Amino acid sequence: MKHLPKHLRPRWRYLAVRLESTPDASFDRGDFQRELWYAAQNLVGDVGSADADCTVVRFEFSNGTGHAVVRAHHGEADTARASLACIASVNGDALGVAVTGVSGTIRACVEKYLGSPSEGPTERTVAFESDDRHAVERDSVLDVRVDGDYIGATNLDFE
Image 1 (cartoon, one colour):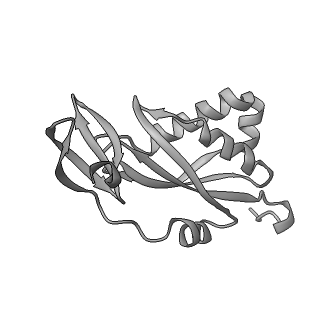
Image 2 (tube, rainbow, N blue to C red):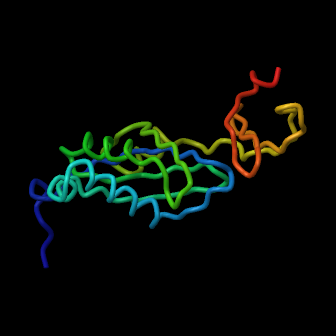
């Protein structure tokens, strides 16, 4: 079977997405993909989400941080970006989603916008609410464990 000529092939845009959650959050590509589809469907309906065709191409998530590459049709990058912004949690774990850039190829997307991974999280004990608490530090942001939940803080909160 012959390939389609270049001018008839679908054109794609690739969105680089940074993910951030609590250190104990765990979900995989399929869970994130399902939330993205639900968000797109709730935002723009069945027809709009089918036009955007948001698909998670690459996914990496561990220790509360990660990144993904999401593919969308050429003219639907704004719809995909808006759908990503509607994702608040995955599997009950709160999730922060930030689109860092849009590119025409996966390779350029990864090289330009995702770059090298940051250092892994470090664990330490901090004084919080007049008590020593367990905390996980990532890029000068601390997640302090209080009564089974995490509270976000910065190093400036402890100086």
